[in-house]
Amino acid sequence: MLNIVLFGPPGAGKGTQSQKLIEKYGLIHLSTGDMLRKEISEGTELGMKAKSIMDQGILVPDEVVIGIINSRIDSESGANGFIFDGFPRTIPQAEALDDLLQTKGTEITTMLALEVDQQELVKRLLLRGEASGRSDDANEEVISQRIAEYEDKTAPLAKYYNDQGKYNGVKGMGTVDEIFSNLCKEIDGLTEVN
Ligand code: AMP
Image (cartoon, rainbow, N blue to C red; front, side, top):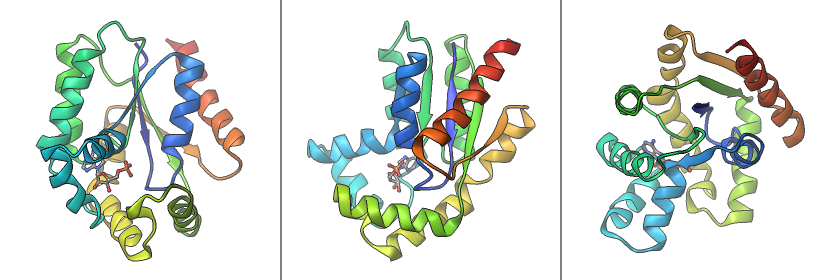
């Protein structure tokens, strides 16, 4: 299986690139942000609780996202592999994911980390807020809070995967197609070696 953690701060382009990668490599896209937004749009109890947290730009509790990822992986047996987008976001989530994949007889192949300047991130998020109406993208204060959460809780995951020899930095500036090509080069390099 090819199991990729697509990593990077909010606005790095993880969602856009995931869509292209799943087509090219036949993978399943698992985005906890999308799953939570679906719960919100369906008006579930979990969705209502998550909304107030997401609107503040902070992370929802680990056990909530681990639970939803767990049930999705279970329902997708027979997949070629997964792209994890926006998950894991904390060390406990990464540990839970390692355990979960181990019980399925597989593991994370690589973390591909999109590297983007901070100024560019805020610009992209504000543009996305205008285009998509995502409430957590529309407000510069909430964006700053999300970037702070990322620096505090999520950035340490780079070391976690580096310690496993799985961290690969990828240039995340340029056009969508240029960034996609940078990601594909990394993936093709890995699959040639294996
Ligand atoms: P995203 O679409 O990945 O930017 O996620 C939007 C929001 O959903 C985040 O700001 C968090 O509040 C929440 N969220 C998504 N994924 C996670 C996760 N793995 N852990 C905790 N909170 C998450």
